[in-house]
Picture 1 (cartoon, rainbow, N blue to C red):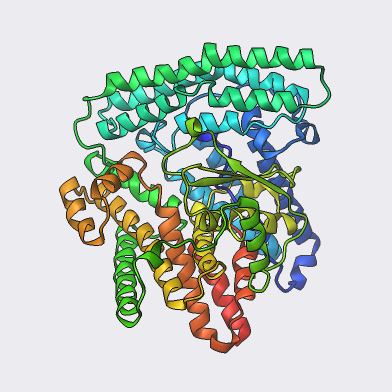
Picture 2 (tube, helix red, strand yellow):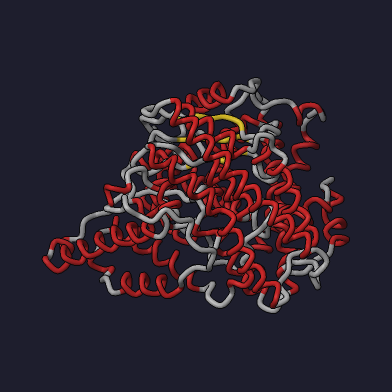
Length: 571
């Protein structure tokens, strides 16, 4: 299904620092086991690349380096994960003697095993994995896949034309998957269906079409072929978009138009037989924790109460005008100027990274998702210079957005990992709660890097921002796990001045969408508070950030242990 085509926008990678060397690890048996583990990682990586040439295109630029240059040009099939493959990978991993691995290797072993174990828990529950959603479904992913398809050589132009020609058949397979869910009574709400239709109609409204526009521009800029050949390729792209991609989106509109009115409930997971069980797993994945939904809910409630108390104290003690809350954090709307400013501001408290290049531009209005302010596209492992940030043109808080996506957010985070020679297997480990937790954490820190000098105002802006994340996360649980109604959501959010209907619809449409951001930030900020509380004057922000980054994408339970080790080492 859609996961086979995702371009891994949210997967982030790195090596962990080596610990003290154990003399036993020098034995011939240990060396052999360490070699076996390295071969396991390499095989797992190549297996992932071999799954689909399309997804591999976003992971590596030169497939010939892995002997995969002759892969079939195919979008693959819209089916669920192969649990037998996951089980086999887990068995092979567990047959390696972890005790004989280096600390560096143990880090990979532990994180990969946790990742595999969570994946296996979805077996028997994939009926609740929706292929189409308004902001996070294949209807959005497919647009991103084509608009971000880099043309590195002439074969790529030929390949993308084939992918466009296959797009309608692929969407038909997605319908087959969805129809099986419908036959079991698992139907999304009319609210969600209407949002999917609206998203597709917005894409169809482009004239010229957004995908056609981007690909034809890239062909025009492509070096090494004649103008006449460029024109021929552009004509093929336009024809493929007209004959296959546009009809595919028209098919989506028609399919979901017929589906309207068939849902037997409001489409929340709480109302299906195993929906709550699936949602529990979804939240473990989204938050990078092993916590139950109730534990996550409780921690959010407590954090919101603390945040409100802190906000009240600041307002009572300081004269902060209403206009102050809406003044720009940094007086510039130029993306490159903002990123240059942020690079300078982070030097004291964040580890240095080098040799970074990037481009940043705005998305075509017909290809944007309402819930996404911007995104960072991770470069292929062998093209580290291809860092790209795309911005939704309606975004107003560009400074904080670019801190989240650029410096010291995703772009910085990813390039730190690259500077430290990560193993590419990290590309398949999705710890999105860690990745987005870091990005929101530095987004909050960016309030200290702009033009605002009033510390109370900075704190108030931060609280207002992360409370918004937390409230959406809590409502997500209220609706999808506890079965809260629109009226109950309105009653809860009205005192906060938030649009209850909008939030209710958002969490119905893409359940768990904001959990990696809100709860991920909560856990990341807790680790910072713990380190500061215990170390006091010995706390050094740059060292703390190195611990977070050097550990790599992982669960917060695992990261918590690494932070505790850091604290202990300082005492």
